[in-house]
Length: 155
Image 1 (cartoon, one colour):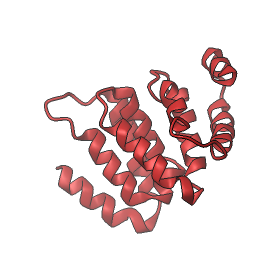
Image 2 (spheres, helix red, strand yellow):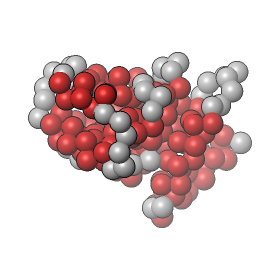
Image 3 (tube, one colour):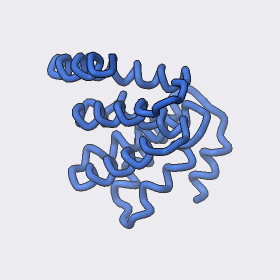
């Protein structure tokens, strides 16, 4: 609790989200219980991008442990179904990192889910996060065809 409070009150400094996110991911990898990933929710729902990126880095660290992959996927799926745009941005930003590169098919499904909001205008920050995720996924040759197929489906 003290760590979260300190991070919440800390002003942004370049690189803090990477260092803190990876460290938190390593700590959470050793935690147990159903509330482990829920601790990330206040930062995942933040309007501040650096806090959402901290969550993305933490989840990227967790996905490197096969035993935690399904828990991370469940949490991201839950956030992708939320009505909160910042949570959708967190999902997209997570897909733009280690998680998306490790699980590209799942990342594309999550991106599709965050954009599947009929009748709602797409916010600029979400559009930016999804674009960044797609460009990251396209950096790997093996992802070209699935990404292009999804883009064609969206059109």
